[in-house]
Amino acid sequence: MSAESPAGGPAPRRLIVVGSGIAGLYAALLAAEAGAEVVLLTKGALADSNTYHAQGGISAVLDEPAPGDTVAAHIADTLKAGAGHCDEEAVRVLCTEARLDIAGLERFGVRFDMDDDGDPSLGLEAAHSAPRILHAGGDATGAGVARALIKTVLDAQAAGRIQVIGHAQVISLSQSEGRVAGVNFLHDGRELGIHGDSVLLATGGAGQLFAQTTNPAVATADGLALAWRAGAAVADLEFFQFHPTCMVLPADALEAAGNGTEPLLISEAVRGEGAILLDAHGERFMPAYHADAELAPRDVVSRSIALHLATLGDPNGHVFLDAMVVEARRGEGYLAKRFPTITQRTREAGVDWTRELVPVAPAAHYWMGGVLTDLYGRTSVPGLLAAGEVACTGVQGANRLASNSLLEGLVFGRRAVSAFLSDGAGWVSPDAAPPRAVSAAGGLPLTHASGAPSDDDSALPLGAATDEPALKVPAWEFETVPSPGPVETSFAEPEPFSRVALRRLMTADAGVLRNGGLLREASGLLGAWASADNPVNVPDSFDPREHEDANLLLAAQLLVHAARERLESLGAHYRSDSVPADAAVEHFDKRYTMSRKASLVHD
Image: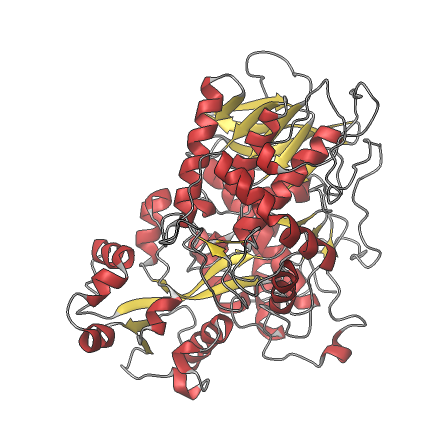
């Protein structure tokens, strides 16, 4: 296939943003405000993103925080949740700059919930030591934020400041002289290309790797695959967080519905009200796994469900949430009043949870790993930036703290724009001073004719562009030579590849519960599928789904490889055959980093 160009040639200082979640929308608006030409591509509609489905809020210590709360406390909570695996400087940046981007969101039309006194209503969530969670529309914060940002983006498009290209599946990054210089994408049955000075990947996660996920259908690891094929380093891919109770729909229904199926996460607050978990035999099982039963921490409940299903011989099965006990104790109508959204959504799915059990299972929720970046979103490939869930800044560590994910997209999306604006290729400010990140509350007032630094001491100067990668990959990255196929072989005929088969395999062998044998089995089957159609290569097809399948297969291989390398349990990576940390690797908490020179095979 050959790439044809849309109208016009490359424009000076053009930023191409791929993805329309919180990181992509926010970054596009900031870059356009600063005078850059911005092209925003999304493979579906602008609202098709993980952000839109986020029920939780955004954590931030404001100028007037809750009594006793401090930035230092937010930092400590984040580090603790990350199981000692966080990049401490990235966490410091996230927590200290959070208030700037909350103000930035308000400037772009986001309205946060207020208390009776007219102050921001701050919620308390698990593992936070103080109330610091902002919501917009109660349990639909993601939708509230996305709607406001989308409106502002569309206004900017109408004013000619942002070009939005919807239903555009980006299939490859174009490179020139060792630098990413644009993207190629499918649109209306054609392959098109567009040039830019930098590309910002903001494509979200990869929940579609697993049979159950809280992510929408568009979460197919596209950004990770694009970056890997371009030679970018990736890290921490073994750490995938699962939410314990997502309503289960039959696999065939999910396949048929495609992008029209919205995942339904059943909030932990339901169990907090007294709902219990039952297995297929009607037996309550959580007390046998943890003293706190259904009120145990999220990862404990997820593992307990997975262990119980494995014991029953049905690792891809589900259990049941009994909320009828809540209605019986609290009185008729209580569930509808306390949980109106869940009541409506379960009813739409054909379940009256006041009278019936709700089928639930642990669901892939958030990928802590991703494309390795520095504190300004720069990857190991010049010209390529990444922000949000697709990126790995190190801020989430081995397990994400609740309500830090939307915040990460904001803070590092803004910083990526700063990196783009300071990239001196072909542009020097009149006073020759490199631009600096400034408060998002007042915008990023940097134009092609103005690069004066701000007085914000927390904003670090950014260097000019060079021919060398901005990000230095750590010395302990894998340096193995690629092998032609998996070491493990099977004399059985492998099951033909399908997305359903891939999800089933990843859930059973590389999901909540892992061990060496299961991961070896997964590696073998993934290798067999890959040998038939190498996912490292861009498919020669105009079918977006074929590209998504290749991206998912590649991401699955990378995840399984990372999981096999980490022999001890840490954070969201749980191995039943875990060895003591000091025997696992020399530095067990080190970040596993891979680039295309690395083998996907465990030698």
